[in-house]
Length: 324
Image (tube, rainbow, N blue to C red; front, side, top):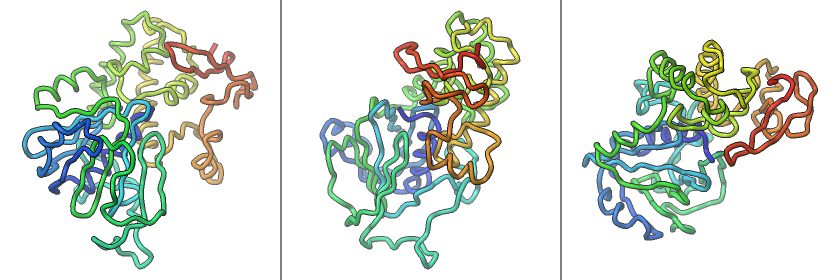
């Protein structure tokens, strides 16, 4: 399932390439036909991510709420950048203010011309996949496309989401009220106090609390395992028994790791890498993490075998020595 960094990156694609433009909205699959009618022909005025959910706001006071879930993905084609982490001229995208890498340009330094045959297609979900297959813009929808958003020069196709619905402002407020704090959206100091207060009251294991989107937004299986290892915290420890300073450190580490994921497009959680080691980690998942997906392999710090178990229906990776 895409974690918070992926959804923020997708929202920035929309902020850069769709906000301020009129969009033709359709449902090639037919399952979102009624919702598409409500949004078709309107201008997108904002795009933001909160945790694993994305909210695309239009000029008729309606919002398209998307939760990709396990199988959802957005495909972008046409005139777009493969990395939209660069902000607009004032540095702001939605409710974030993160700067990243430069636009990818043609060989002569120009952006691809509008209306010309396109050779780029980008799938954004848990991982970004850029394809060089030639296409004509706009290409015919392929497969079960729930929603298609089309501007004069860019198209975005949504497949397989868990949630896809049009919401009024009041309904958006209800959805947001159910979500825990997101470091890229909410005030970090205020959110830290909220996070600490909730965690320290709960008898639930900390590994389950970090995955609870009502407690904190955006953390999934990878970041959960890595945050707990970085804190040297036993995942079975009840939240109320985790020392306050450790809970605060968990929040601050999430505030540190999430922007790295947004900027690089990868859940890079190992510190202290050489430049060559970092390049390697960004291309190979096995070099990217401390414990995630390393069951049976020696811990990078102590040499004990990394353990894999199931907790709350999800795989949990941890070091029984460093996190004892």
